[in-house]
Length: 324
Image (cartoon, rainbow, N blue to C red; front, side, top):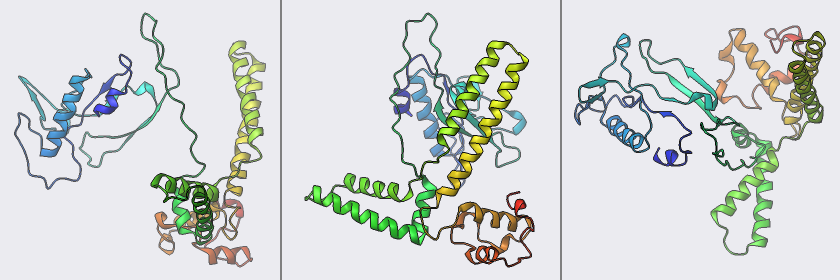
């Protein structure tokens, strides 16, 4: 926490710390009512005191609340003040997304807050001017594969064979250029290069069309703002939105179709999702594997029988209803 606070630009952030009394999963820790506080767990007490010290040194405001409606205990004492340090808050307008999840207990005032720590592109200047916005280093583009793709890399036999061949070629290329024993960083780069080569998602041919539709939509939106609510501007914006949505849908369909086409014998992932979704709706989820264990090889026999024209009673009669 101290390292994060040290990297923040001064006089530009407003951070509120709290929820120092919560320590989930450690109910077996003995109760501790010492050190001038009445926290339930010794570890939570130590963490809370350390965070308060960091906040005081960095001159960050602290939020203290006491919610008697939820039967909250007093967890912080200072002089004649008694309250509960609760709720982790921050300057939410600086973030793009913040979602509050339901608590585990019905009468608990705790909320699990999931915040996407992506700063807005524009930060307000301080009153009086003369201050330049903080310099943010551009983020390097990451690889075109994700975590689910890496799990699929080790679960699928065809992909695993291609990955091992590609990795062996990458290691041989490194050994030719570096005769000495390879370092851990060089091995990690070889692993990443091989995974990127196998799991690279090809670019969709509709990408230029989608970008052109987005530019048309932005131009229509700007014209509508300048026109001040004219009828022709609304019509142009409506048509531009329709063209943009059609381009986005086509781009998504082409990307899904090409995503797994590079590996022979692997069917599109949406076909498996259709099978599992219909089993769940039909109340026969026990016939399928758990959702977390679904792979691209599951239900291969049922899908093959359906493609060959065999009538299965638990499949929809109309193909258009598969994705509903």
